Image 1 (cartoon, rainbow, N blue to C red):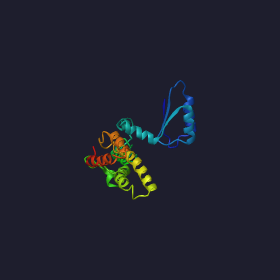
Image 2 (cartoon, helix red, strand yellow):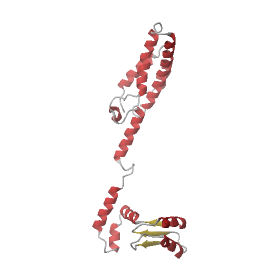
Image 3 (cartoon, one colour):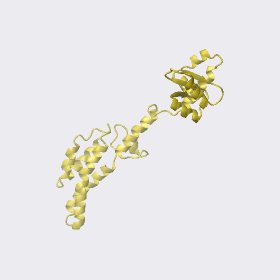
Image 4 (tube, helix red, strand yellow):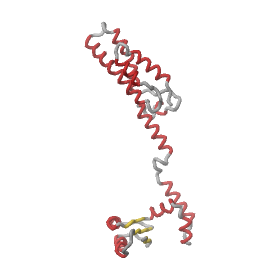
Length: 227
């Protein structure tokens, strides 16, 4: 049962109560008004399983199902041009959903890439496109430091104090394989390289050859491009 309510006043509690008690054996009661409902009416409607449609929702339904011509057919006093303009203005005021907004999709894609590469949106690496070099990440810089650190450890064994040398050895030994693994994880969504991350990580664990996979990783990374 649908009960239109148009009296120039806000639909109140008695309207809802009367509609729910007057009609029996009806599955659904729907009250439509061109105005608004009081809070008491809304609460009562929820208790009595009565569906309320206010003026704004009515305009949205007419616009969504393109029923303006049908409304004008049965209501001769309605001028369709002003109503169409009002509906258009209401649609323009309504913010588009993320799924409908192409700019939101682009921003979401850029944000995802930024979060993976560790770059800021305002930085040059925040707007990388296909074919460009891979953006630098904090772990990329750690790989450079670790690769350079091994020659310092080797040749500084005599010159560097033993405690400092031991700390430098430990940090370099742990940092290089860890940085290679984490850097490859960050760039995995924007490039198809490296295919054998585990090989770089595994060989960099052995301190006496770690400088070789470090240099190889940096050289191949420099040549890789965004897919």
